[in-house]
Amino acid sequence: MRVRHLDPITLGGVTADDRSIVGPASWDPGDDQPLLRNVTVPTLTPYLPAAGRATGTGVVVAPGGALHFLAIENEGTTVAERLAAEGVAAFVLRYRVAPTPVAEDAFAAVAHRIATDRDFLAAVSRAHRATVVADATAALRLVRDRAAEWAVDPQRLGMLGFSAGAFVSLAATVDGTAVDRPSFLAPVYPAWWGDVPVPQPAPPMFLAWATDDEFGETVVDACTRILGAWSRAGASVEAHAYATGGHGFGMQSRGTRSDRWFDAFLGWLAASGF
Figure 1 (spheres, rainbow, N blue to C red):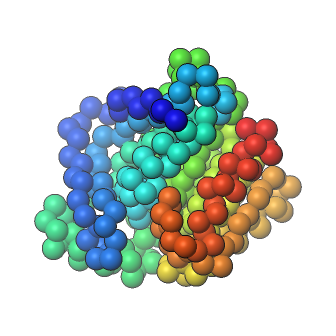
Figure 2: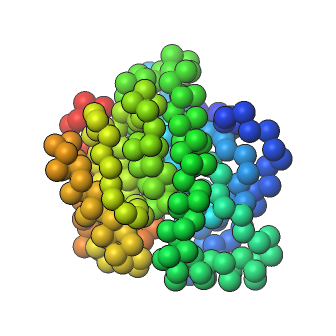
Figure 3: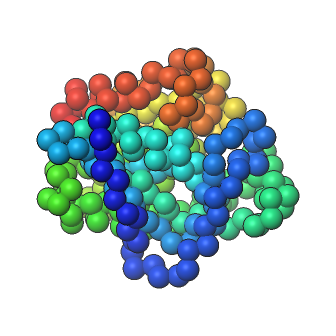
C-alpha cells in the first residue's frame, strides 16, 4: 500500500543549524541499525496513508536512544511506514538530544557510559526533560493545527515512543497542559525515574516491554510503576509484558514474543475507538 512521505517540518521556531550525524550503532557492535545523533533542530516528518485509506487516527512517533541519539529507522521511519499502510497517519519526531563527540571512538566511550551508568541516564533525563517536552508538545500542536490537511481527527492524535522516546511521550503527557496532551499514549519499553504523576483526565495507555530487557529494573521496574500508577488512578491501560525480546526490539523481527507488539497495538487502537 502506497504511503505519502512529506518533507520534514521544523518545530518550535528553532532556527539553529542542524548538526545531526547519521552513523553506525557503535555503542553496540552487534547492531547494524543507524543512529541519528547531535540533533540540534527538532523536526516532524509526516507519513500519510494513501488516499481513501485514512482512518482519522494520527500518531507522533518518538524513537529512542538514551536521549543521546535516535534509532531513526527501527523505532522511527519503519514504524511510521507500517502505521500509514494501516491507515494511521504517522509523524516521526526528531527531538533534540544531548550532544555527543563526533569522533566514533570518543562516542563509543560515551555510549559505554550510557549502557552501564544508570545514575548518568537519570541525570540526563532530568536535565533534558524540558527540552524534549517542548519538542513533543510542538509536534502535537502542529499536527492538530494541520489536522484537516492531513486527514487527522485532533481528538484521535496519540504518541508512540520507544525507550527514551517513551520517556519523551510520557513526560509530554504528565507535564503538558490538558489541551496539549496526546489523546492516547503508547510507551514501549520506557525508561522512567521516580514517581509517575497521572494527569486528569489521563489518556488511555498501551504499554509494552520484554521482561528479559537488558536494562533490567531501569525499564522493567519503570513499566510496572507506570502500570500501577495508571491503574490506581482508574485510567484505562492495557499492558503487554513479553517473556522474550530484550531491549530495543522496535520493528525488528527477532523470533521472540515481542514480535507480537505491533499487531497488539493495532488491535488496541481499534478496540479503544481510535
